Length: 170
Image 1: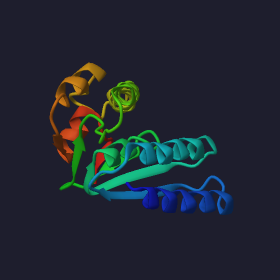
Image 2: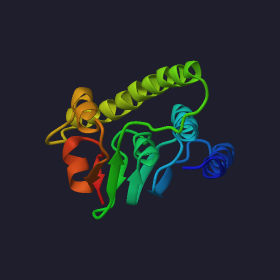
Image 3: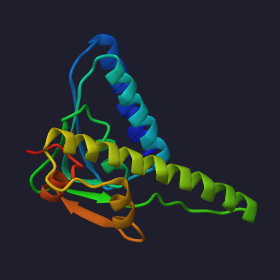
């Protein structure tokens, strides 16, 4: 999830939105991660297109690491898919910092806000899966926060399904 890949995807989504209003769309992810700021811009665009009556299936094949795992959550309800051999990587946002101590303190506050938003995104997906009965062991926001604390948390597709992070393994 880079600046270039997000701009490319946003361009295609905008074009398809204009050419085919209400079209069901599928995004296939196989991503080793990327920039949260760029990924959130794409996440927001998908949400806007969903409000314009597009249905989004997002299918992770291979891996959906970090920001790609968050983008997987942008799918329409019931449309978060992972391949049988796919993995998801969930962890707190990271950053490379520089500047004055004031700059760093300000950036830490921003990162804390971003962390809260990401936890909310994952928790909403798990809650929906619990309501639909597709998650046998749905995770809460607090559980996700504990699981990703100070570690990279690799999740195979079967565990992502039982925890509510996805809706189907296919």
